[in-house]
Every structure is written in C-alpha cells, then in structure tokens.
Length: 338
Image 1 (cartoon, rainbow, N blue to C red):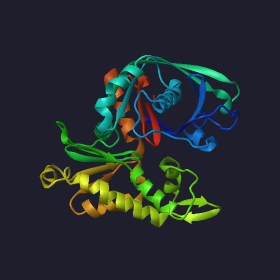
Image 2: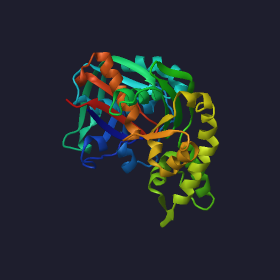
Image 3: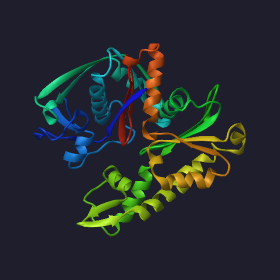
Image 4: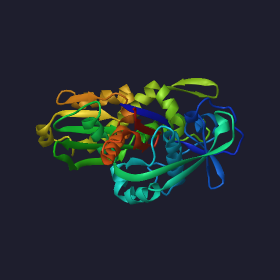
C-alpha cells in the first residue's frame, strides 16, 4: 500500500567534489540552495564534519527548506504532477508554522542537485509542481494512519508518540480528538543529552552534539580515543531518567482515571519505540491497567497518515498523493504503490 523512503535530517554546507561516493540518490543528496551546495541526509553523515539541524525548525529556516527539497526530489519520479502534499508539525509549533508551510510549499519547486554523487553527470534540475497543501499536527497524522492505514484501529484509544525532538500524546475517539489530552514536550534528545553530559565527565567528545551522538545512542557503543565504550547501561539510565522526569509527569494529566474509563487502549509510536529500555518504562507504568499496542515501523507512522490525508484531499488519486514528515532526526517521504 505505502512506499516509504527515509533519510537522516542532517544538513551541512559542502562544496567538495563528491563524485561516485554513493550508489543511489537517497544516499547521495547534494542540493544547491542560493549558490551554495549542501549535503543532506545520509550523505551528511558520511561526508560531513559537523552536520546539524535545528530542533522543530520553521518553514522559513534553511534546514527545513533543504530537507523539503530533498524529499520532493525523491518523490518527483514516483508521482504524477501536480501533487498534493500533507506535512505536519508538533502540536507546540503547529499553529505558528501552519500558514508559513502552505505559503512556502504551494508553488512550483525547482530542485537543483548534483547527480555525479551517485551516477554519471553533473548538476541537474527536477521540477515539482505542488497543486494543494494541507498541514496537520504530527500526532493527528499518527492517528489518521492508525485508523485508515494497515492497523485499522477503531473506537477510542490513546496515541503516544516519542521522537527525537518531541514526545506527544492525544486521546482519539470516533468523534475526533480530545483537545485537552494533546501534549507536546521534550523528545529523546533529552535522554541523549543526559548521556552526553555523563560521557563528558571522563572523555573529550570533539564538539559532538546530541544529533551526532544519536547514532552511538542507537548502537549502544561509541569509539573515543580508539577505545570502544559500552553505552548500554548509560543509555538505560538516561532513558529511565527521561521517562521519569518528562514523560510520566506529563501523562498524569492525560491518562487519568476518567480517561481510562473511556478506553484502556494505548498505541505507542515514534522512533523512540525502537528502544526496549523505553518500552519497559511504559510497560512498568501502564502494563497492568492498559492494553499497549506497538505498530510496525513506528518512525514512519506520521508520514503514512500525511499521505492518507493527501489521498483524501485528492479524492483517491494515489499517484498524486504524498506525505512528507520532516522529523528532527529522520525525514520520511511516503507515497502509494500503484
């Protein structure tokens, strides 16, 4: 049903000759923006010095525009134009950025890229015509995917989404969402920063930030001064602290006794759910009183919801419907198989 592509949300200015450093476009995204070349995504990780991304960036920001151009480039040869695109933002920034996103997106986009990175040739241009745009809160995108996608969720249920930049929640019913149950707070970056501060006590980290430590956080180890440092226990403690200090206190106003009388079903999604240590925290607090449900490929759920929303707006035109989720750690592009 869905065709999903994902890449790292990191960017970096880079004018170097990177010919034949990647085997395919998704790993060789080098884009021209205002006469400056930038690597985007996985190429920034392999070739960059200090790739970066602002947390919860605005459509006015360079990193958002570069990542959007990269996403449109990936989608351009898989869809019929003009396309309908749905994007989203965390609830905390949704009302601020919604109109800006529509203004920026609803036009013809010329994406100039360096094709020599992954094939023969040099600078090329892809033109992507966006006919319609919709913007929804990220957590609502997750809810749409749960109800209208492969999960086919019914009735009332909580949705908890933990990503790199934000943790969000909502109670969804057949009538719609319950506004007072929507929260948007710190994401997994909070836990990574706890680990970073612990590492700094005895190691020189060469100006690494939370984005650059994310890969080590996932793998459970890091090489510093040619020594392999096991991070698993440190990661477990950091996630536990993050859960106890951020997630649990915020959920006390959402998963209340009154709301549990409406439903005890909880869907867990977002890239944070790849960490068993975080899953154990949810199980410990809610395992005895709620039915916890885990979705396949939790990091792409919002993007699938955006694509389904685009499909609704086009009246069922699969080949013209796209969802783009510019996350703080990963960007996801979703369209439909024929």
